[in-house]
Length: 178
Image (tube, rainbow, N blue to C red; front, top):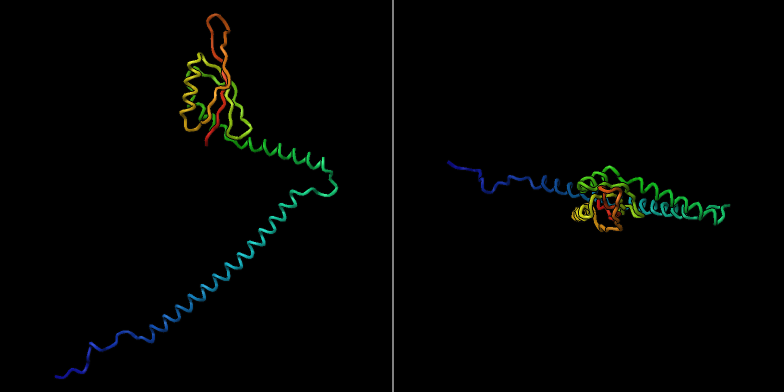
């Protein structure tokens, strides 16, 4: 019996087909890469032109329009600044702030006034307490809270309203940490 098939030397892989597939894959990847490079460069150009337009618009906004005196223009800018500050103060979430204050206010303390400072995080608290020890406890709770910092006792005075009723009126300044 004579065997004519030698399995050890037979090629099982078609080299021509493999090379065609590899070369066509490389060509497709090069085309995709070139397409991406072109699109990135076009987007970069569009971005720079948009940035130039934005700068031109901002320069027009800051410039005084024709026919308006300098005094009127500065007056109008100060009004705009004032109203923008009011709008910024109104963006404060007062319900969250009241919840924070309620959590740190101990028994024996009644707050009579909450006033925001010039900065949005500044807060001035005014109130009354049964004793100065209650005010000290309130200061300690505010300082130990992670939501308040720079707690300062601005003023305090003893109140005597009758023979049996005594108290302390106080004023505290602090910063609200968000």
